Amino acid sequence: MPFKKLCEVYKVMSEKMDPLIDALIVSTVVSSLDKMGLNPMLVVRQATPVVALVVGPVIKQAIGQNLPTTLEELCKIGEEMLKPSQTADPDRTTLSYSNGVITMNTVDCAYLTMAGLGKSLGYPACPLCMQGVMLSTYIKAVNLAEVENFQMENKGDACVIKVKLIEK
Amino acid sequence: MREINPFYGAIFFGTILSTLDKMGLNPPLISRQASGVLSQLFDGPAKQVLGAKRPSTVEELMTQIEKLKTSRTSEKSEHSFSNGVITMKFVDCMYLPLNGYGKSIGYKACPMCAQALLLSASLKALNLGGVKDIQLENSENTCVLKLKLAEK
Image (cartoon, rainbow over all chains, first blue to last red; front, side, top):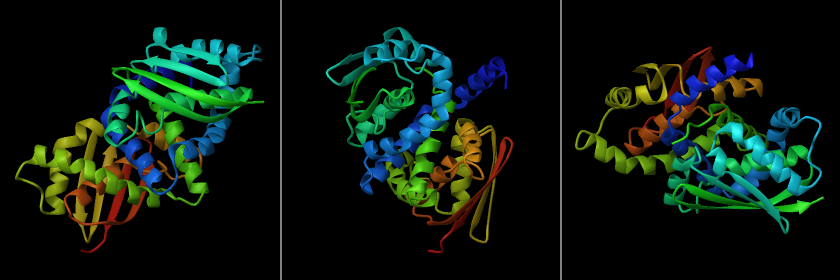
């Protein structure tokens, strides 16, 4: 499908997505799994390599020849790469790396409704952070580190996601 | 608020469900667990929205659901109920990208049908019956959903 056509399809589909219904479905599925003994991080660890298989080639194609060689570079490229996705305010999405932890700051994330619902179910933010999954997939795709876990905090329309890495 | 990218949602949700399926937790099993949690969340709002007129039969529930949510999750929907089977037809469901992704990884449609989950949760919240089996078929932008109810 040509890119322009894909954008048109995406626009039409986005207008149809009801964030509350989406949040209800994803949150209750993740929360049920949690009650069955599969906590969200375990689910993420299992799902990330599969998502990386699907999305990895697209990410590598988008980055081109200049694949990051350090985690600082990974953050710099990641910041630029996340901007067009528009899942949060592109000008206020930042990534930084220090002491084995990548910190991602987002404002006005598209999944804020899920964060609200997650809090009502006893989580500190979304039961499963989509931005965290996206970031983990990116880290897996460029093969610079393994994600040990990630923690999310939400305050109003701002979220802080801390991804703890096992460096290679 | 920013719009959700339906393709991201489809890839992540679809992959998570498919991964769990490979680990032995198939989508109907997850759906049965999740509809219980969802029905608890529905209980309060359902009382508020429906007031004293809570549906007491499946037919009444289907009429209420069509009135309440058609415009929110799909363009058109039709329903019928006979011999313990609810049949629903949806056109242009908001989860069509998930359906496309589901097909690409070996499912007949969405790995887990969100419409079926919502309906199961509503049935449970109103104590109208449990869902025994779910069948889903998709053809382009149209889905046909059959929910077989367990006798009470």
